Length: 456
Image 1: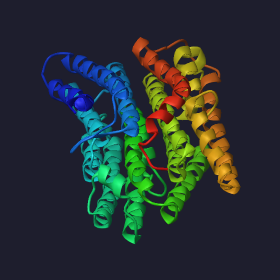
Image 2 (image 1 turned 60 degrees about the vertical axis):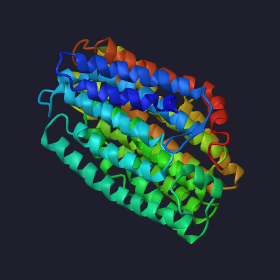
Image 3 (image 1 turned 120 degrees about the horizontal axis):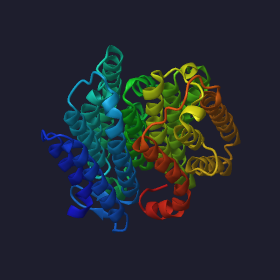
Image 4 (image 1 turned 180 degrees about the vertical axis):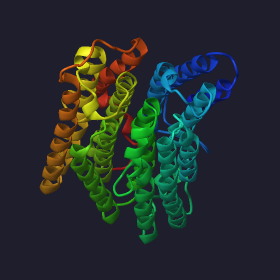
């Protein structure tokens, strides 16, 4: 079983070695550890599923391990070029990389363990390791955002803890293998699932407890915003994916579907009013999490669509936030009306951001579009025509709100000359956006990985 723990081992090694006080050593170690995590996650894709006393690796875990590892590598690389622009950091650079590696370790742990109690511990640990990362820039607004993040998500995780207590009462176990085999039922189970959706949904940015997310994404350093949006929220959604299939069709799944639709609607309605481009992209993340929850609530082909959105969104949204960092460094503001003529001044950043924006808002041929089509098709197949039409309306509104503002920033008249970022600051996002297209070819592979991994 040790091979299945390799991504965690590499992240742990990266965290421990990052605190060695040698110039640039923390950067090299973090990049090496993240590259090793990607390599081991790819290796695990081709290994049989495994269920032991402590580890549970099925198709869903494999998808999550690879997603987290890819964003881990991208964030480690992008941080090298971004951190030097932070004028008053809260701590030394090696401590930033220690926290980054430890943060990734907690996410890899969460998606690998064979116990929902340990899943809760892992998600709680993500809060502990990431709260200071939010406040890296060490000013009043980032510290306030960090505190708000800790308070709100901790409240949600208390609800999740109560959900685990009810689940243990219903099944006399929190072991994932046991729960899948015994298929518990009853009122206590339904209460557990409802509480879990609300509790873990708080960390995943689901309505109505999403309010921390725009503040954190708007104020955190761009590498931190990128990894939060692209993998922290999906890791919280992973817990919901493990618990919702335990409930039969009924109130629990209807509740999840309702919250998913409300999440998409709320995000879409708030996007047009945003004047800060990082907050705009944060609301786009909320919309994508709502679509994923809808797919999870329906199951079947919609669940495959949810996983496709999850992976494509991870790749594209991290790139979008990295590119937002490029804009912030060069323009000195996150206000949309303060950014003009990016296409003329920063052409590589501009066109990558354009395609990244199209990717996260569900334009073809990006994976997000394919996932949304699968979910909407499932709704039509279930004769939920009204729900499908409502979702399509809000998806269209979100698409127009985001891309209109992006086009405004990119193609307005510039006021000064060229100011493009260096190669790492643009190459890493380019690769992420390109992979958001390539993921379409992996849809059959995701389907094959999930066979037997989750009950519809």
